[in-house]
Each structure stands twice: as structure tokens, then as C-alpha cells.
Amino acid sequence: MSWGRVGAAWGIAGVVLLLASAIARLTPFAVDAVRGGLTPAQWMAFVASVAFFAYTNGYRVFQRQWSPRIVARAQALAADPTPARVALAPLFCMAYFGATRKRRAIAWGVTLGVIGLVVVVRRFAQPWRGIIDAGVVVGLGWAVVAIAWFAVKALQGHAPPASPELAS
Image (cartoon, rainbow, N blue to C red; front, top):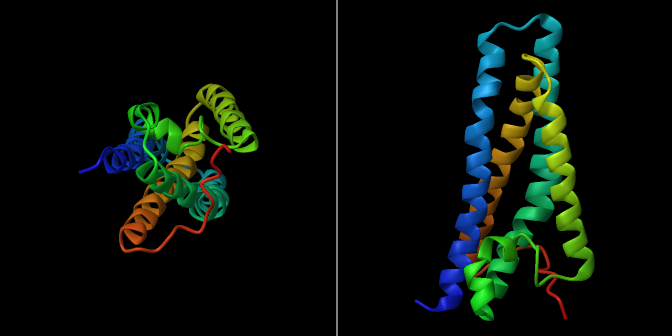
């Protein structure tokens, strides 16, 4: 197996492991919210949170943009491996380096935004934290499925519908 393929596999696996770790950390808060009993208004908020994150994050962001780009960047890594790209493949696939200036700025900006939201949501009392976390878990789960889908399609010879946005 070539270093490029190793890097591509490590890139995709690393991103999926990062998402799976977040899912594993957030799921207990979502379960606790439901287990503690929700009022009808809280159930409506729970359903709204799940629907909102499924559509906005799961479908619009992860399925249509982020996941295909992860796989496209993994393919680019496989075609042109460097020691840094292979060693830091998950970061390369998420466009923290080796990407256009705009894509890097977006990657870092989104990361800082997510960190800010995590800090805020952690301060919420149950069941509200769990209600939000349930939606986030659905969105992140959608991302994992989308990455796997595009990776399998790429192995079958179908290019992902996204540009890897590599630095020139």
C-alpha cells in the first residue's frame, strides 16, 4: 500500500474518529434529558432541535459540502502525499492546511465558532443542554454516514461532488 493511500485512509478515519468522539461525549446528555422527563414544550424543542440540526448541519453542511470535500481532499492526499500531509492527514482533510486561503479561513473560523458554542451550551441546565446536544448528535451522525458514503463511492470510482480546494 502506498503512503498516499495510507494517508487518505488515516485522514478519513481520523475525521470519523473525531466526530464519533463528540457523538459519544454528547449522547449521554441527550439521553439524560429524555430520561429525566420532558414537558410537552420541551418535547417540541427536542424535535425542533433534532430537525433543525439534521437539516442545517446534517444535510446542508455535512452531506452537501463538508463530507464530500473531506473525501476529495483525501483523494488529493492519495495522489500527492507528502510526509506532513500523511502524518497530519485528518487536519489536511479538514482543510486546516494545504487549502486555499479562503477554505483555511473558513475551517479555522468554523472551528472557533464551534468552540464558542460549546462553551455556551455547556452552561445550559438540563434538559436544555440535552435538547441541543440531541440535535448536534444527529447532525454529527449524519456527517459520519455521509463521509462513509462518499468514501465508498470514491473507492468505486465516483469522484465526490466537491473540490478539494488545494492551495496553489
